[in-house]
Amino acid sequence: MAVYNPKSLKAEEFINDGEILDTLAYADANKNNVELIDRILEKARPRKVGNEIHCTGLSHREASVLLACEIPEKIEQMYQLANEIKLAFYGNRIVMFAPLYLSNYCVNSCVYCPYHHKNKHIARKKLTQEEVEREVIALQDMGHKRLAIETGEDPVNCPIEYVLECIHTIYSIKHKNGAIRRVNVNIAATTVENYRKLKEAGIGTYILFQETYHKQSYLELHPTGPKHDYDYHTEAMDRAMQGGIDDVGLGVLFGLEKYRYEFAGLLMHAEHLEAVHGVGPHTISVPRLKRADDINPEDFDNGISDDLFEKIIACIRIAVPYTGMIISTRESEEVRAKALKRGISQVSGASRTSVGGYTEMERPHDSEQFDVSDQRTLDEVVRWLMESGHIPSFCTACYREGRTGDRFMALCKNGQIQNCCHPNALMTLTEYLTDYASAETAALGHQMIQEELSKIPNDKVRAIATQHIEDIKNSNRRDFRF
Image 1 (cartoon, helix red, strand yellow):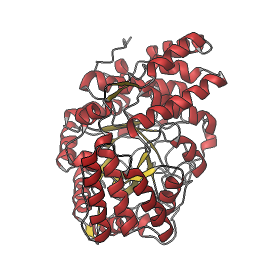
Image 2 (spheres, rainbow, N blue to C red; image 1 turned 180 degrees about the horizontal axis):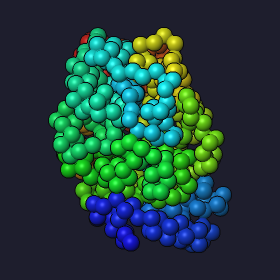
Image 3 (cartoon, rainbow, N blue to C red; image 1 turned 90 degrees about the horizontal axis):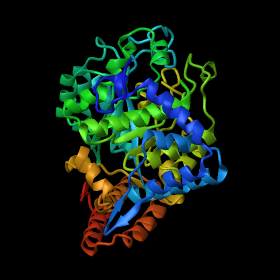
């Protein structure tokens, strides 16, 4: 029988079924233990030490107690703490991105995904480099600077060489004042050698959703294809880091398995990366199972309500205070608005989840990976964020300045990341407002920027940022960064 060991490189030891079951039993036994819950909440609270902010986070067992707690007063305290932590380390900035689907050819048979190889009526497509260019120009013309590329798993139709060629194409396109400055990659688990190639191609974060940490469920949900190999999939982040990729992004697909099991497994994976590599996940995504083509979420027994989803997000934020948290257009405007108050720091905008979807006038539905709930334009999402007090940020500076992996986390953990992130967010927002925004959004944004500039504590940084913002507004100069 496997023994729990967060420093092990074996999947069944760092994501250990026995440890998760013991954790859930401990959480059940203590879900109404007010004294313990108060101690856990106090432990997680941010503390100012000199000019730095310190936050300990929580273990998977402590966080599972909070998730199991059903005391309304304590849940409200969790929500307040999650927002306090998010503001302490990320401020009121929300990073913007969009997915770009390159290919939906797939050899796997995942029962929750319409790309499964038995689906004979979905339109299969793989972008040529000319089509990649057109998609990227469409995204640039919206104002996007950061993409997450997505593919199905098919070594014949979508080999690593194709992905690398697409990355090169994406970075090479400069249209008007547009440029994609960061390409994150969400492709199937692969080899150390291939991760090294992705690193050399200049990717940002490597993202891979575990789907479910429950091994038996995982095997049943992935009956055939290379993704059936639970260990190889679960150990992918270790290979990515061995290949030199500093930043990795975790996630589970909530709705496939019992949510408390997934929550504990997700945090154990984060603890494992910290224990082995000295740095936890750069991001954690929280997708929920959604309707798509021949996939009906009601066929699965583990769906979670909006209220429970909100609680999960808050508990993740409390447990891993320094990790970016992502919510996509799978969720509605209403759900995303609540999630922003519980710890989310990145959102997608104007997403199309079909191959070639950005160059289509009408949103195509015949090749979508999932239904998009929030179908607003990027301009509408940007204005909505500002109206609710958030700064939409198109910043990619940390990646390009080498502030990745443990260097990023060191700055984030002591609160110093805000000395560059806040002005960078304002400068990239100015780019968006000047080049792409509607008149209404631009007016609101420029007013917000003037108010936010006054909050930069360092006089020199504030003066430089102010000058750069004027340069952006009055010339074609772009891409200033701290």
